[in-house]
Image (cartoon, one colour):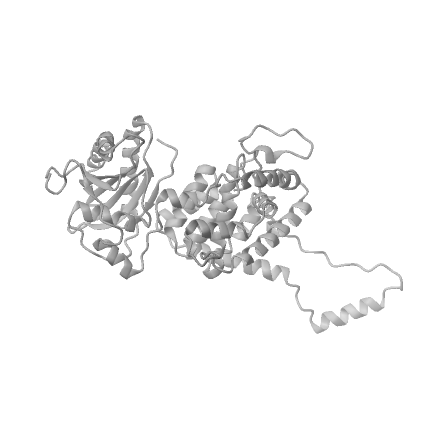
Length: 464
């Protein structure tokens, strides 16, 4: 089994149209997923006599053919189980193998190379008594059928995909307000370091921030210092969020409209290297991360997705594992604001950065199972209200003011006054133990100590 985390979805929301041919089926796939899958195997459940689309599952195609058997069994079982949990087991399945040709390879050669995998998918579904009506290979702008023997509709050289925006599905999606966000590869790239010359500056800022911050958050650190760091991180992140209140500028000084790369560059310019490093390191504390997960609704949630995307791009080597926190927050904010495709991509990348990151695993599972994010939003709202109530001093009553005056008059001039005890911060106020944090690699060192090798694993796994 490869290291990719599969994505499932049992939702059947959206407009209903009839697809009558393999070509229309291939054209519909990006609208079903919300993006163009690249290097992916996708299975879609069909229900009823008319073959209504149900749950779907996507996974990266394993590079080693030796993993195809176990992958096919895993995908078939997951799709059938998920569909049964939400409605009924599927009455049929359609599959897609999406992979661009390698250098020197043609689309037809990709189709033939993946044929054993397609056959294994069919037998895995058949073993569960679920027929596979079609498996398509989509490669190089063409689609090929593994099931249709009629060369008139499915020629051996493949069939060109419809031009963007010209298919029946595209028209229905435009009417329903559904849009495709580009390819999976492009969506993932928006969350990854760019490899630009600025990466060296960001790496130096992360080194400096790690030396200053990590000793204050590791297990056993002074709790008062940890609480101050939490408040400092939340305040800094709040200032950064305010810079994303305006949408990204897509028009250059020459008046020419730019693409998504220009919008990302505009967002990157709103956060300097030191600020990014301080928040990235601060997010490794679970309580801080949970506080910032409260940015989840409306314009605030949309701005938070952009901020977390910028911070994920700043997790340059050897700090790639630190990206799990901003990626998980981006996935949560995107899911909460209704952008499920972006949520799936961000959460999948968070699990690649750290497969054991519990926060991302739970969100990924909930999103894939089609759960309503409102239940989690309710919990976060309650946490925010409880914290606000605890931080707001209660107004003194008339009787208490009188008692205070009486006690004050009884104090001798020059005597020390007794102050009220200050409320403690965060989870400790509720009697919980200190949350675990996740230092890693060079960030796990104290100033003046030798740095471990790049890519070192984190020293603690608790509290995520």
